[in-house]
Length: 253
Length: 295
Image (tube, rainbow over all chains, first blue to last red; front, top):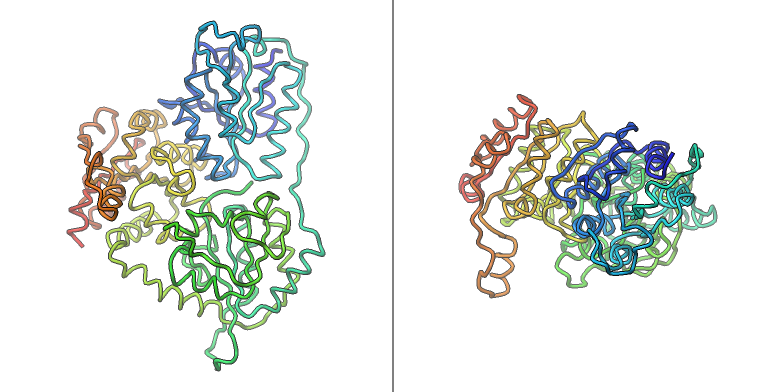
């Protein structure tokens, strides 16, 4: 069991079923591991396409897809798609290679080498992590999937040095934690309920964060049903309404 | 979000005057899972979106509780739990007239009478009637900006695009392919302009590889028309916005995709009817000038 193989097993354990990427010399070991797993793979024609496909996959399904991206140009190519996903709170797992640990920061002009790859991508990621120890892989994936399940999602970047990718990894990933998102404080809901119950002209603004709960949104909005028959409404009696507007973006599944 | 043409749903219209008046007059506003950001609430960037009533914000991100509009009550929570919990806190059957108020705003918005939206109204009714369950994935292009006002879908996750927020071009086609991977049981439409599609032409090859009947609706106006219009409004000469669109039939042939030219709504209906006749992408090229002239 090496790090690349364990990565595929962990992704499967987290329910990821789709990987997108253009194989390259630097990601060849990811593809060796991918071939032994069950993830479907699709090859775009540019890494930006991989990122946009992962974005569309996530917005349509509520689930993140994984992108497998080569060091350097592959990562600068996908940066635009990560920027869109970050702006719209779309979960996306971007796994890339990076040059071997002993070469990092030396500027030797090695294949695909770029200065500060992780820092470059940090500006379009929730976090960008350099995996310097294969034993840390389960932890960094747990961080990523805890965010996807319980916080405002977005793209996460994990770069794996070529020597780490083939390094031995502990056998058998632990089962992922069950993660629950934050629940509202009861006293806060009671106060909000008081204000809304007394409102004469209430308005609901439904953002992308509500997209996973359309039934709850409808039930809440319809709590004040439309009057089925016309009734008098003197100007001195304000009339209440619930109106909803949506930003067509994202919420966790 | 509430279902197609729900009587309480005003869509994403909060940048428009009639909806803004409603927002400013609301005495209690409940904002859930929203940035209250510029490209949803202030498309013209005139700072004209106001909430004068009490503002309750509920968000899964604590930082979002403080951005753009000052909250009177801020609750950190996942929206679904919060909405279910709030419904329990509210009286059950107070007869109010939300639908009437929403209808009044819709009447005042008069979106279907807006000359700027006129070419797009029949586009969305045609797409809806032909493929009512489809996922429509948009690029940054005229019909998608219009669709953010006009489109009404049966469920969430059926209409999304990159025309807001970060605002990239080239999103529509590859994101539609991702949607097709995720929801193989649903028809998928990419709605793109000729300019935006040229950012990602190679992904037609990916579309062909997938072997799925994804519809690629191209609004062809030979250039970056949104920027042309903005240049006109800003009295800037049309510099750098007049492109030669590719020969799309030849391009479709090169990628072994199907191609149908569309000049008016009836021919779009006919073309969409052929979507499932083969497991290959179907490029539906709308000549924007001819379409508008046909109406």
